[in-house]
Length: 159
Image (cartoon, rainbow, N blue to C red; front, top):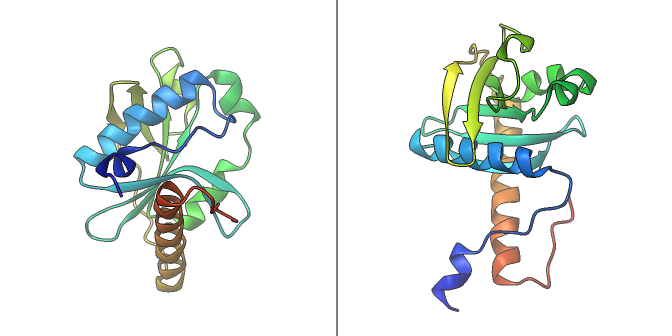
């Protein structure tokens, strides 16, 4: 196996705009600087799909919801459910979206394709033990399945 396979990026699934992908890239760089690992588009127990789930060095779990426009924020009514699956919930957006539309009781990240900064940290609401365990398993399985898919592209993620 060549070392080049380990640096491949899975293809975009086509649901995200170029703007959303740039925000995601900047958020990813911030997450790595914070010594977190992340998985994108992670299916949750609620049947929702989180844009970014980050796992910190002490086991803390953040969910980052990417909003690329005012309209994107206004039509999305599912984000309050994400709080049930994380210790901190944050929105991520870009400089073209007014920051005052985002609720004060959620964290806020300002990002572009090159990086990001936390404008407002998300308030902590610690997960129950059973929920944390379920999220850690979900995160680990998704990450391992995606890595395996890079090594053996004939397999695919079934969830």
